[in-house]
Length: 267
Length: 283
Image 1: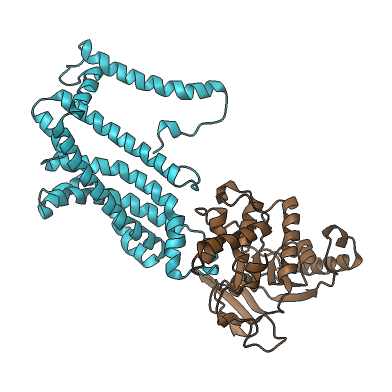
Image 2 (image 1 turned 120 degrees about the horizontal axis):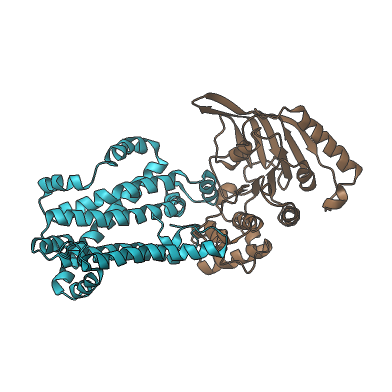
């Protein structure tokens, strides 16, 4: 999950430090250069791969279209609802599993079976059950996010140093109080790592559900552009979605670092 | 320092000596046994330990690695249940953890999400004490453990010795009658350890809490204690109780050279030598 900026750097010569900055720039620049040149010199058809500069210009246009903003709004609401519900279900469930073995034994086999199932395969089943509406779209986001959130909450709660709990008990904290004053905060670093993973998954499942169910939303907007043969719009939208995903992750990491100064290591 | 120590934080249930005859021990354990069951079978950690501490006594517990001396302390703390026997405090059997029996562990188990101030006031928050009063009492304790100026630091920003000072302040602010210490200075460098030992003695001499101090250092036990319980290798039994009749206040460098110290040191050492070092760790 580490982005290039956070990749561990070995202390060493300035040459290796320079190459740690120069090489990533080189690889990205090469990719963008090829993207720009290939359609221009006729290596690929511009209707299949529009040049990079055209895509950037189209991004600016799309960002100014009110219908895009409406669809973005619908997608953002679905995303927020799905992600929030996944947290509300996943964190308590995983934490309880970490502290109560029978619940772990009960739920763990479902996670093991559910883990390799491609969540996109469930979208159509959800549509059969709940129709082609928001329930299905949000449902798929919840299902996709749930596994990393539950697993990270489980590990966070399970791995708590018993003496940390004893310390709190010895200071007069009761069993119920321990949940909120020890177990949750002590598990928080791992829960936050799981949430970061869930952010990436949630965008994937959101887009997947909107591409399949259509109606409205970013995914539907993209599909309509494809149907209309607007290759440039499809590329611009894909770029926007990629940038949104990147920014969400970056903002999340910055917010956690800023909001929880006591955290050791990375999220 | 006077305030947090004189004020009794909990209820009438633990008025010292309320239901115990005068001269009765502060802590008493009779026939304590602890058997751990696991898939591989049963392990007897403690086998018939009798123990008694008068109010205000400083008692060290030494024994070979893995002998069950930490387990004994956890039972007195109420964190681990004895298989047989009971621990009485002021004549009443204990039923679980209680702020009246404060504990300090070897590892620095501070709450990493709390600052020094937050850690020290942690136990007071639940009692509904006004915030200003909590902070005032915490400031006195932080001063006692010489951490003034570090109130807003998080545990990750502190050295090992500083963390252990915070752990001590966090426990002392509850004004426990009994202080349980599980190799508290075992993971701290030698110079800092000497300083912390001296400071602990100063606090103890001022407050006269009953201290149970688990250590594997014979020197530390002799420097600090009134009595040393020497335990056998697992399963732990009391091998001998040594009275440390060295005059106080003690100067750690001076007592080492005395004839009495040498005699006690040799005695405890030879008792420990008799015990085969058992396998497993100290838990």
